Length: 254
Ligand code: G
Ligand code: G
Ligand code: MN
Ligand code: NA
Image (cartoon, protein in one colour):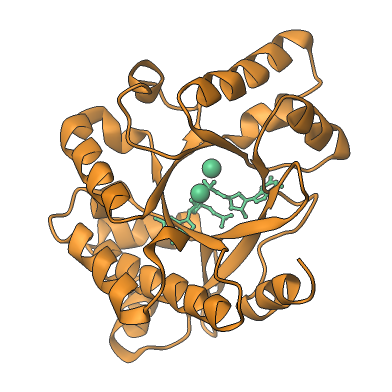
């Protein structure tokens, strides 16, 4: 896996590429953007899951260049969207904690934006709660810098960590991504539903929009809609798509 990542970084092989999962505005049913999800496929290894190769990249000091490659590919898709007149769609990129605390991360992101010529407002960074545990002040400051440059921030896997609940009032993020654990619990008991709907209303009190992940059933979607959730993502609407299929989806009538 390490060798494949290095080959991809050094020789520009296409072993690592992005899929794009559509995100839907619940009230209107329109696609508002995509989450970029890294994929690896090689002749020798077949398909390797991102959990596996991201972990290798993090341990072998390859996550910085790999993360930059992902940013570049995501910005390149954004520029394709813009060239197709779809300049109001966003693309969210998952960012590893190691990237986020790296001193050059801010300039790498801005470089990817400037080089591709995209609007920074269309780029979103997904961060996880864990990186905030040890580095709250420094990370929160860099999130603010991104926001001042137009870039949006989403807090991924919300509800599965511990830290941000308490400091949500200070956190410089635009979106909460409701972890699919909570979505999966919808309609399994009243008590679970209280938690899910309370997270949504609490987020709104802090002026955050809520993106529900892992929406698989009509029942879940209807519950989320009734409880004011803003955006959904999940197999009910679409699995992650190739760049070509993602473009087709939004080009043919969105
Ligand atoms: O793609 P999948 O649906 O299997 O994602 C598995 C995990 O891998 C998710 O937690 C996702 O956030 C993470 N992941 C996918 N692509 C990237 C990426 O480009 N960078 C980082 N750091 N994590 C990613
Ligand atoms: O941690 P993160 O939210 O970045 O991970 C996204 C992961 O969720 C990806 O692995 C993606 O393939 C997966 N995913 C996307 N939609 C669904 C869904 O509806 N159900 C399930 N179980 N997984 C999903
Ligand atoms: Mn994510
Ligand atoms: Na998630």
